[in-house]
Image 1 (cartoon, one colour):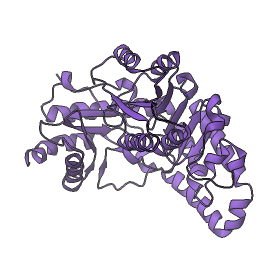
Image 2: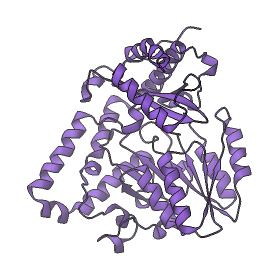
Image 3: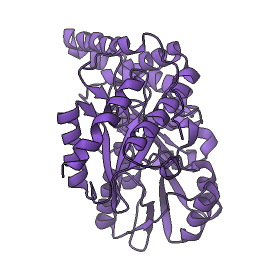
Image 4: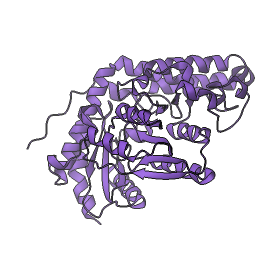
Length: 393
């Protein structure tokens, strides 16, 4: 079966970034890439800060942060008064966990597709409080309806205090039915935290439509913001219970100020984040989303074909809206975190290509992303050279 043609490129988009042209950057999902215009906006803010630090931090900075938060929340369809800027999704998860007041007998439920650092955070909070951590298995081939049924059966009303789910999973690029899952949990009185690290900028769905108690997403991945920019959204009943990880001078202001103000932190990433959204809109939001998802699907087919994986065996858990795709690696490769990391580094060093390699469910997976600065020939070159590298075990 022939590989479908790639999408038409977005003319000039590659020139918006300062990425090394000698490297194929096929892993936008891990750390993103900041457009040059956004880099310059942040540098101007840093110059302002260094020109008069006292004035920068004491004359209107809280108001500037509030204005930025309102702009970003509006883009995401979230209540700006129920949102707080933070550095990343993992930090937002930690804020929620330590604000819950977990006790012995309580349970936090996650899935086997959860992000590793979030899992570490859940385990630590459970150890600290005496709560229990339980992992729910979701087969990669499960339909949305089956996922909802698995979650419904896995909840323990009266004991499960929090369900943590991903909107898009990191390791497996799976778009989960977050709104339906949140609805099931709400019926059973279980709070839901949605880890939406990859959603802002990639997905059109609004935060409020999901109906979760907590939602946290990064804007420095698919929203073109500087790294260290995320939004934590909290449902109204929880807002006054949310405490920051570090107490500072806005503590008495309540949520969201007490979470956002972290003394002498560098706030320039947040303040320049709207320029990233402006860049995204200038390119055409729907156009970028469609291009990136189609290009990732093209890359999956090209590389999968080179590795001898039939189209029927290429997972498509994200569907046509997700700009990340995974490819199963040959049996025995990258079956542990350390082995996956080592293989990723080999591919980077020998093929001058940045990809994600993950170990999930006992086997290794290659994750490819599509972004406006990528071109079809980058995936084609990887497909031509990767089989020989993998054969060198």
